[in-house]
Image 1 (cartoon, rainbow, N blue to C red):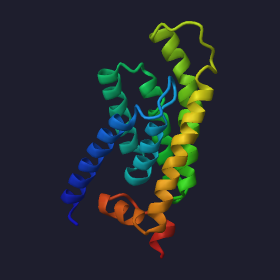
Image 2: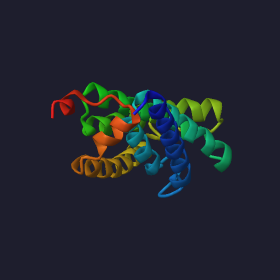
Image 3: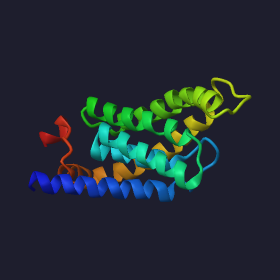
Image 4: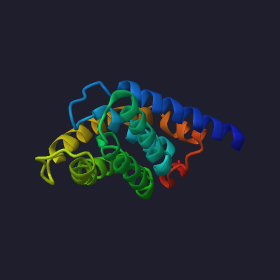
Length: 179
């Protein structure tokens, strides 16, 4: 496939993931917990890489904030996990569990801790503690991450995951190239 076609396919796929992320985000959502966003983050991280996963999470967050009136938690609760998920997936040579842990740590810990000053000082929400968002962010990432793992493991077992990555122009993990 030509490079232009791969680039176009990546853009179309990113657009679909952003649209899907906006549409399914209200499912299972409670304040400070959006499991479906983490499903999208990990899928984007694995299929597109860290930079594109970050971009998708950022755009989904902005659209959710504008259209749905979601506070900045839509950003702090997604962008760190999406990027770290893609980064750890690549660094591990393509291990899905690394993408899962990147999302859980990036959002469940880093995003939760950064949400405190954002919501307290920028959004003016009082009565919060540094660890206020940690339980809900952590549980949201575990739920959404588990769903992503079920989907991606199924795609991997069906030998579809690597074909999708190849079609999207994503660098294939080294351990898979030798097969």
